[in-house]
Image (cartoon, rainbow, N blue to C red; front, side):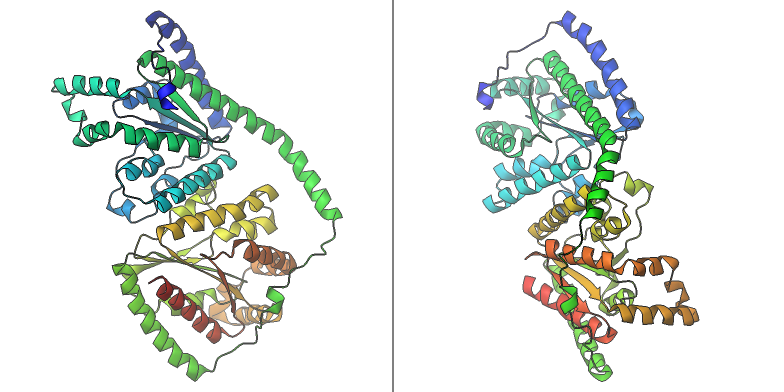
Length: 499
């Protein structure tokens, strides 16, 4: 593919100056419009060493408002980043609505440098392509404009540029031993690049090849590419905004006209009467807490991350359950993350962004008090997201969890289940007990009135997101003692199985 690219293309100086000015004005205008429409934009620069990425990125950002973009230079992962899944550091850098993120090299290092340097095997390479594809699709589905450009030069041109740089004492530092090594591996990188382009070129995140022998030609083509992509993104956003309300009204009407005749019965089959005597509970609690503490040390030595997700009915006992889980652990090895309604900063990103920021690093445990499943539970039932968004979330959540298990994480997901009568009893008890009254709110009562709607959402959530690598465990929680031991036992078994 790359061998057939015409690298002789060039632009005369006069023509360049004439076209460049109008392109700069257009780009500045589009940046302002994208900001007003809250469109996030990601611009990826990949290419050969010495292809001119730095200069061309600088040319691109000069006409833009510097308050509206960030430029990220992707270096080999540091120690903190190496202890996370490879997409973690890029999820953290995805732009908020209306902002632009420019990447000087990107997540594609995983399928280029790591591949040629043989830091990953064929299975990991295939997983990386899948992870990258889902990453870009999720962001594009959420409204991100993704622009990917590869700057291409020949091996001969690269050699000449290296020579020119090394002759000048002021620029010699820019040519590293790694650059020279990769130059010798040009053919290997060529194969890796062609595979990358073929595997990750998509309608929602297409690649554009930039012939970079002539800087003026490359500069103009980059401006054309970015402007066209942003214009297309603006047009799509305006169309979506125009039809969204009509589609929403139609969907509500259709849904109202269709009777609910296909009720699932997963939760109905759960025996909530399961219980445990207190003496037996105390004995097992001590034993399992000691065992879990030993396992905490082992996962640190083996650098295994552990994610424990708690979901459940209001008053199901999540807080007390988590306290018994962590009671005997080394506090330096775990973190409990309470999940509330997203704040304004979190709302300006993809809904999974805030959870990517809270992923455990290798060897540590993160416990989530409510989770990313709020998208298909609270947000679905309360209408905080569209039907298209929560239906899409099933796939996106499975992909995120798959990425974590590819990294080696243990994922344990609990649904703490109580009967409707037991919930009512606990609500009343909280109201009567002074030191528990803070636990009961008007929102809890409103949610209870929607029990059947939440139950239907829970059933579908369990069905669509209980996977081999990240299964749901339904915990019979009418008896809190039984529930605590079952959760401890489940976590222990999951970690031991991984070890």
